[in-house]
Image (cartoon, rainbow, N blue to C red; front, side, top):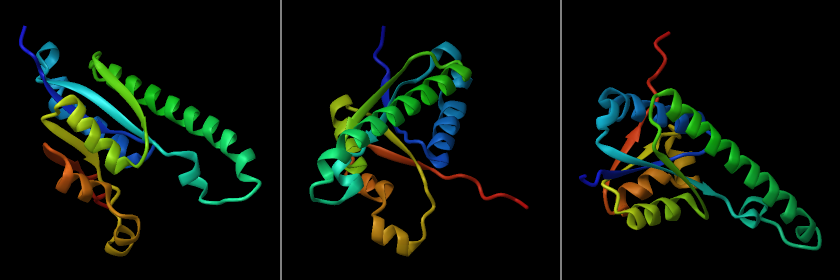
Amino acid sequence: MSMKQIMVIAVDDSAPSMHALEWTLDHFFTPFGSLQPFQLIAVHARPVPISVIQLAGPATAEIIPMMEIDLKKAAGRITEKVKELCKKKSVNEVNVEVMEGDPRDVLCEAVDKHHATILVLGSHGYGIVKRAVLGSVSDYCAHHAHCSVMIVKKPKNKE
């Protein structure tokens, strides 16, 4: 049996992320039936609680455990969503990994760890100012991931 190439896809609870997953399944998995060319690994970068709240002081000690529980629940929901969508599209073999940290670092590390051939990301479609302030995960990965990077954009509504 030949080893399949690895496709890593970034997942979070955003609409662009779920669109990217669905588009990828429709174009790279479902049409091939049991002869799917890639092994799919979905990676969710779970924020570190302190990076979410960005505050210090006596209240931090009480807030962090609550944030931790919320972040774990969110990661669980995302994992279920991914598995559900894959199953609906007849893709039964998907590994979902939840890694803690900045999505830019987490995704590039996942590519290296799995020797991925391709990294797939959804596009949030931020404007130039928002992208400059927040930093684009897809821009970063396009320059730093050691594989090809595909950015799936949501089509503009034709109204």
